[in-house]
Image (tube, helix red, strand yellow):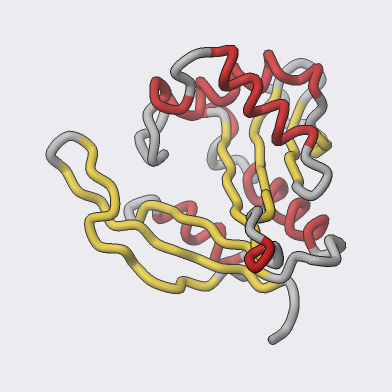
Length: 173
């Protein structure tokens, strides 16, 4: 895998590559809340959801990409109720071969910088499993604060995992 990549806005012609990236992310880690089958019960519906994210003028949907492959994605999507539109949810994932190489850090920093120019956004929220210590460190290093830990938030088989709710303030309060 090439170490040279760019960060860019996703476009509808990326759908097939994005589908492959999501599949890799979900099949190579159990840190996601959903399994791959739950995330993508059928390809047509999932691709329609991806198109909605790509075409949402109020959200950010970015990728780290080489000339031939998407390495990671990050989505910052404002919440839809009028009273929550100042907040957004963040999700991100990295291809197994891109993890631990600084791709996630650069992708997150780029997205947070872009989000600061979004006039109506004030707070970004995310959930991460408590045992995903590398992700928590990444988020904290980039200004996210832990709000609370949700005990036994996720259950995989017979094993429970705590969830960590984090926030990032784009504005001073």
